[in-house]
Amino acid sequence: MGEKVLLASGNHEIYRDGDIVTKVYRDGFSKSEVLREAMYQAIAEELGILVPQVLGVVKLEDGCMGMQSVYVEGKTLAQLMEENPNQKEEYLKQMVELQVQLSSKEAPLIPDLKVKMASQIKGLKEINDITRFEIMTKLNGMPDHRKLCHGELYPENIIVNEKGWYVLDWIHAANGNVSADVARTYLLFDLKDKEMAEEYLALFCARTRTEKGYVQEWLPIVAAAQLTKKRKQEEKLLHSWLNICDID
Image 1: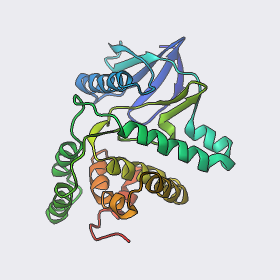
Image 2: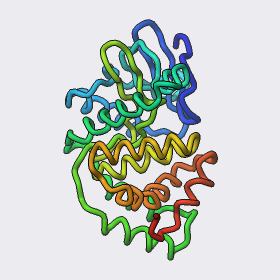
Image 3: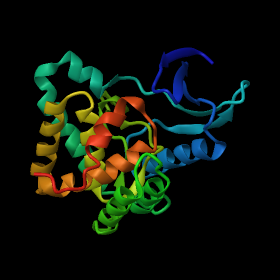
């Protein structure tokens, strides 16, 4: 398999063997899910987005599935922010520009975000029927857009080198309203650094002339959809956003 580069999450590990990286998915991931991520990443590449070039999908000796891609040299944006704390605002501005770039694309073969979220929320057992109805009503009332949304755009999923910013982890990609994608990124920041989450949101809203309240309207919807991933470290924050009352 080669050298283990890092443990990306509880769901996969990443290994490097020369110029080839294999993202190995743990038990429970179906072949179709792995193929779907490979396809989304390949589509992003065809759209001109910097991503690791996909080489293929393999079945390993232990039965797990792996996606292979070309190794990209560089540091994650998270590493750069930690090493250069005085440059965090500039890094956040560049990240917002990256998100704006992604949202300028449209990929018809990638699913609709509202349809995907509706399916997640309808099957969510952690909320009662009244909350589910209210969140679904809110989702159905949100504007329909067809912009490319990454689904988990945050510093750990961006590699920076002299050629540019490479975006990793495309399994959650969808076409939809970029403000929903921004709300997701905001929540990811908020898990670790509330101040940075607010700074990121302010920068995005200023750059795109988007009302802060419009992005915040997506927070309970995004939180409910994210609960389906059953990440213990996120549960407290996500439940705190399930209140569908208007946010100041």
